[in-house]
Length: 459
Image 1: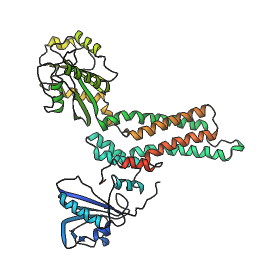
Image 2: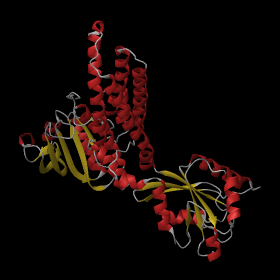
Image 3: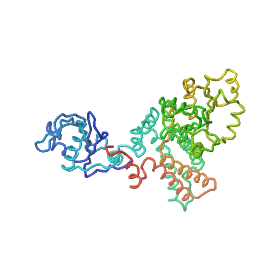
Image 4: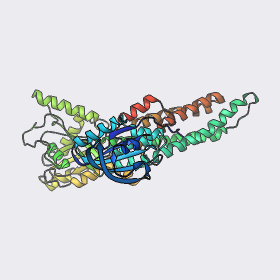
């Protein structure tokens, strides 16, 4: 359990986005939060009011009324930070919020550092470090799935799994540590066979979490999806159809797209980063050649490739030859037969034997729903949408889990080779250390600074 850290100073910050708006909220937290506001508030005596209450009044600087406000009162420990917290809802004028902030600073508060409210909540034991990081993910969520994953982590789903793993290891660690106290008597308190089974189980669980990071990274950062193909295959038309806007210039002139055009679209809760590229062909045009080189570079970095070809002017043999010369990297790809509205029935049937093929017309948007469903299947989105699986989205968590997995493997090797209790204990302590890094049971000031400085100031 993380000990409570009672702060001596009171912090203040704007908790809503800067700029004009109907209302703005200024948040104060710390031992003097209520008394600072009480000193400038004209209304009820805030120091005598119960927690979780709202109070209307005015904020005054001397005799000057700065604004009419509603004050939300949260008394320790029943608040976000477990300190006294007040939130001032004022009119959303940048001038008003500036004047109120200056007044609170003059009365003894200091400006909060980025993420300091959440950092105080963590230090005071409101939640663990993984949950605190999920707060930032929740704020940044821009789809149903990223919201769902962040909400589950913020409510402790991921943390509970890590703590359960750690608790099982702690039991065996204590037994092995006990053996060290009786080393001269050559006794074993920890059942080596049971420990071996436990480590194998933990490895399977951690392996599942590590594998989930690929999905988590997709959910958090979007799927880099490259649209490639010969000139005039309809790549720019497809991009526009996927984005539902005229993002790229469409022309019958080959080589119109000479640079990478990128934009995002949310499909079924997954964010796809679609990248329209220059048509793949040999060219003497220096500018177009640069575009083709950039296309090949994007293909190497893609998580998914959509290879577009014209059904009405391409034969199966030509497509096979294109794919050979393309030399697609080892990433999933879909073949998109475009311009089905211009193709004959015979031409359509000629491609029936191709796998991973979606037939569509980007111009008329016929087949777009099938394409979207196929895209979701390619990134295994169905499992993330319907399952209760824990998804790792944080690179720091992934790295700590990987170190844990490596340390567990050393424990297995030690058990197999008959390693003595002191060496086994050291390896298990390493596992506990890396798992503790995730939830913040093991932490450093540098780690906390690195995490919380990425938060917005008012959070």
